[in-house]
Length: 372
Image (cartoon, rainbow, N blue to C red; front, side):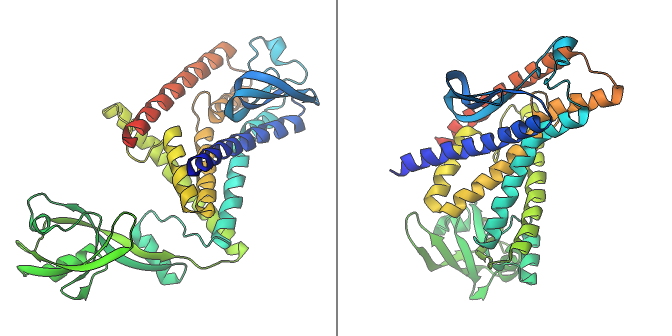
């Protein structure tokens, strides 16, 4: 039952994100007088025509995720076809810019609405890139935070490894003194040959356990790598105004991180031919959907918001075949005061689309590898 629920949630997630994006294009095109020839639910090949409205075919397609809109003349090669009444190319440049940006705007809008709801009703904690930022927010009273020290790695053959200090556990105290940061641990161990750790460990499927471990030291070191870790992290319920401001902050943070993530992806592909950790595709999103559905409905809603935001950022990047790439050609037409060569534009978009398919396949391959 849990698997079926996760599968349904995954299908709903993808469909909502893509259809709201395409509806933005559809609504903007209609308002600009551009004929939308087809609004497809799912991806081709077509199964059947559901109905026709205002000259638009609403169709049901085989691949049951997402959707698309097809505008009149958007792939026209000749100037006559491009300038035909009701075609995309015949619309003013300003209208074409709005049409191309409308899908991205809808994804941003969905993200802001869901984030505002989550930061108010759901009492979500904002995303903090640095622990210093998180501690500053706690000092202001924006969130409740209790820091701890996590054992991220136990050095093989070291003193901690010999007594069985577990990776992923948290050191609460050293010789009875509370430690909040890795430097606190180093300070407590300085000049000693043995210390007692108060350890908190959460074993799979069980409640956290606390116990003491005596560890020998060499030059004040136990053979562990440590990092800051939030033991307790929560937020109060906020007014809608405060939540909206936090939603805009979250948009900024996630936008920057998405762009940096794309940069890391291309650098990693160029240097090693591998997809770095943290970059995930359709399989990874399905796995995240399953995990959030098991956790709570609010966690699932937050995933939708963050993916909607990521989809918006990726689509507006000036890459061929994406909305941002098509927008680049429209803006170039504004600068040179004439349409660019249509064959060149379509060839560029075709190569861009092919590259995206290869990239999706590669990321999906690494998603599968990480599953096993």
